[in-house]
Image (cartoon, rainbow, N blue to C red; front, side):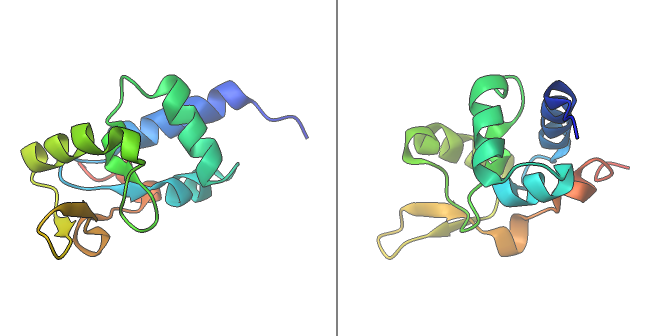
Length: 112
């Protein structure tokens, strides 16, 4: 079976674009919604093609981002009012997915 990777990439970017401010989804949920690849493939798509979409709204399954993006993402989360978890020192530990997660499949209809 032939896979149209460009169409899949566009689908991923469309789903990320549809995640509302203040909410998040996971790399794995996006992969499940697209029906191709896994969390690492989604991460690869976002690293290569995701500069124009709200990439910070896609997090690891535990609500964290890779350290290289953490500082910018936290600033964006705070500006959007995204529910966050803190560690014992009060430092932001990641997105509170229990409060902020939207299923990737529902992202396209979130504003409707």
